[in-house]
Length: 315
Image 1: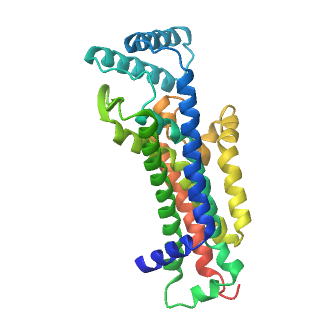
Image 2: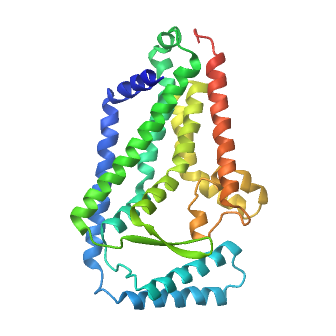
Image 3: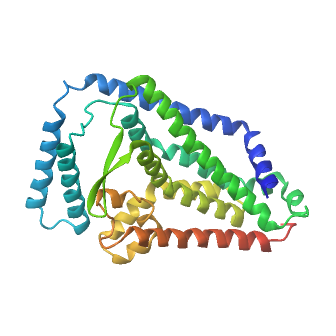
């Protein structure tokens, strides 16, 4: 199995387009860094961090008092933010008022969809291209099961996606350190089990990038399934990219009128909604979203492997 995956990896990096995608990914980080540096130079004189925290708490308390109709999730989020700010003041943990390496890496994560876009392109073409180039027969006549062949291709897609995200994170850290310095908050304050805890900033950022990668992994799996079932890379890539950019908005519009929207895929791809308290459909939980994502993932994989295993070699 390892040999099959390595073979797919080598084939992937023999394509010039792979290096173009990597170059574009690094260019996006550089462009974002240049914009952040420009905006940093336009910021007014730094304020006292304690005053900023106290102002935030006043704003949160005002929202709680003036918006009694807010959802329970949003109310809980605001109460947690107040508790975190009070902990910061009590323990004298400064809030950074200027850009630093870790704040840049966190903000750069908003552009992580670029890596996801490239992952979807690879997933949409990795099976269909074998039919397009006429090399699928050479694969299927080998003394290797079709399951292992298809699994090796999907594993290569996942590894390529992980490579892109890791490269994005590492390059953002290097660029951020070069432009904004290594100073900044060493910890991230979060609310866990009814109390404020201090979390290592690096662990928090890795978790953040992981949560932001969920939607593209699911959509890459969808693209992989369409590629295997319909043998059409254009269809696989087109449908997946269309859903990547429009799926969440359409689901949000449906969730405003129909409770069954909570069973749609894009009600769950943004796991950060549980961090901000702005849950798409009230009553959803993290465990429910993980269960729904697992169900969709298994469904996509079942169709991909079932159809690929049953298809005639001459097709």
